[in-house]
Each structure stands twice: as C-alpha cells, then as structure tokens.
Length: 168
Ligand code: SF4
Image 1: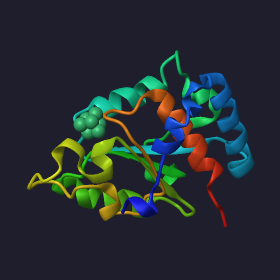
Image 2: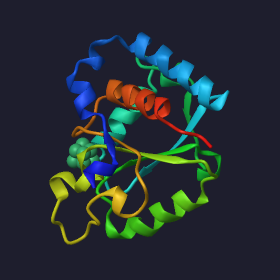
Image 3: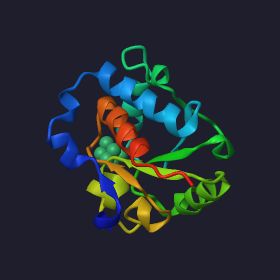
Image 4: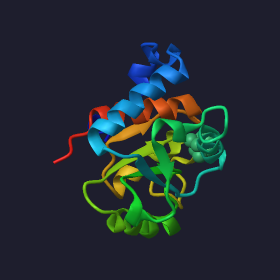
C-alpha cells in the first residue's frame, strides 16, 4: 500500500519544513494558480479520529497560519471540492460515508490523508471496528504522516501534492 501513496515523510526529513511558512505558502499559491486558475477547495472527512488531527487542521486556518491566504479553502459539500482531506482509521460505520463522499466529488479529484490512523489504522491498528486505512476504501495520492501532523506539514503536503498533480 505504501508503495502507491506518496508519503511526505522523506521530504520532511530532508528539511524542507525548515523553510518558513510564507515561502512554502507562496509556492503553494503559485502552484494552485498554475493548476486551477483559482483557489483549491478541500472537503475534510473525519472517519473516526481521536480529534487531534482535526485540531491541527483547524489550526491551519487560524490567524497564525491563515491557510486561506495561500489559495486554499474548505467547503461543506463534496460537490464543490477539488480534493478530499481524510483523517482517522475509517471506522466501519464511516466506510460507506467516505466512499459516497468521494463518489459525489466532480472529476478530476484527488485524496490526501492526514495522520497515522488514516494510513494504516495507526494506534487503532488491529481493532475489530476499523477498516485500517483510507486507501482500502478510496484511492489516495498523498499521505501526511504524524500523530497528529502539524499545520506546517499540511501546507507542505498540499504544495507537494498540487505540484505533482497531473490534470487531464
Ligand atoms: S493519527 Fe494520532 S492524532 Fe490523528 S486521529 Fe490518529 S491517533 Fe489521533
């Protein structure tokens, strides 16, 4: 599974996150403009997280990080989303909702997962009530490691994901 998902880990360890937020953010804004000619709209789905990944994602849109200034925004409807941002190990009762959310999105679309739970179940691995990773349900192109990942990791991951995105 890990072979088909781009994982930010190696790139983070090479020190890209030491660049400051404004620099990474301005690169992200440029890439979004190149690929979308408008803002990038994300739909976030929590498939059963402990809530900490959501706290970090919410922090990314607070006045300190201000993710919106880089051309990224969150939408309530999957029909308005370019990408899906998913957290959690996918509890059995969220599996169908996740699949339907993905199916409701217009193409082209892509999926990013955030947090170790979303990759393979993380600390909930082996539980009787989880699917054990988002990629078992829908295709994932990029994973942000961490428990939880920091807001700067989200900004960097969006940059790498959009930069590598091939839109037909
Ligand atoms: S990856 Fe860690 S912080 Fe995120 S939902 Fe799972 S246990 Fe919570």
